[in-house]
Image (cartoon, rainbow, N blue to C red):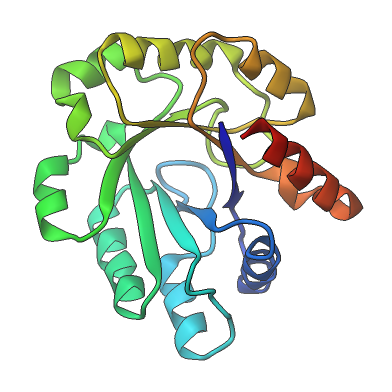
Length: 223
């Protein structure tokens, strides 16, 4: 398992601070983008990141890869904004679109140069996803292990069974889990025979304070 930080902020100042902080420790960062419609929270938007870069108010390391977790109704507009970032030289990794929006993944992948995957909310079943998609056309599948919207929501351990279900459907791509990962829940995750490839960590890192270096070191051992 590899750990990456997730950034879910509501102000540009907080966003800049976390970007600069986590680039010191991680080469891959996930940005949570919420519109206040699909989930009950609105975060710093992609266009704001574009503006910050153009105004030279934020420094992005050339080696940093950014994933985008789109918890939004209008993901098409967000894809266009992500393309703006790519045009500015930002390295875009995996873009996760909410499965409830039934995105035409193959069509999107023909239109954009970045990898496309699905974000699966707790009430979405793997069998349903397997019926709609050839799973191995998806660059990644992210399983939400909390009710989405805010950092710090309680961990939902039953969601870990979806990892096994994906593998039993012969999905061979990257599996991520997002939400509620901390010192207490890591042992639950590690106890499962089927584990995620990527742990997406929010408040465990953003609220670490002086313990950040220690927590990062512990996560490095996991991988």
